[in-house]
Image (cartoon, rainbow, N blue to C red; front, side, top):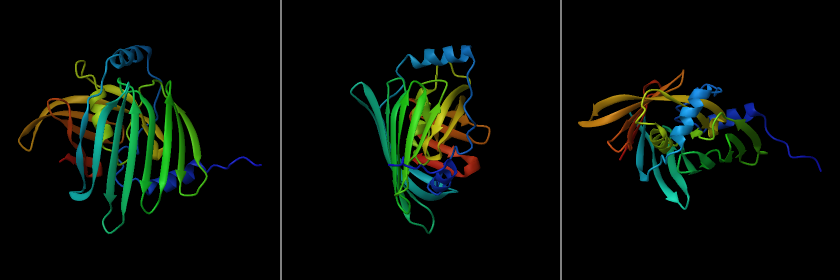
Length: 251
């Protein structure tokens, strides 16, 4: 019996691109090996619990027009944490696409397993297993043979920032070391794009938004900047990506 065939990376990227309706970090740059001192700092940050329970609903806007919504919950589950969501995206004049996501993490924010699936014009699903800084992905679209890929990172504390899954940015805000502040760089995986990369996050002080004083956290790659607006407990209440004309608001 012959071994199962797998689709090429370019075929998968082409198919998945049609599902990424409001993709913010498609231009993330490849992750690079960190200097030893930076690794020590990162390990010290990872020693303390980082996550906090949260649940709610985000409204998604593109160029000021409503595009969909996301229902999410982040909560402990035994010795682990689970972040799950269901996002519905509707392009103007097009059918709705639903994205379901489930991320299992350690209390310090290091991912253990990620699962996502889409229901709409194209059906797709994937699982990602994280072990010691390595991510093993198995992706499937409709009846096509699965695409299997393994990626390595410089740290087990990889940040998952998937397309159309906005509570992942709420987790990123928790991973930021608010006591140290300054720029902090994290390895990133965008599963629906199959892209490893890195993102730098830095506190930009406070800003008044709709009459509320909010903490501003800027997250950027060489190609894109995302602004995260947080309340006094560092809960994500708004996200903007000016270059993509995208905005996400907590309801």
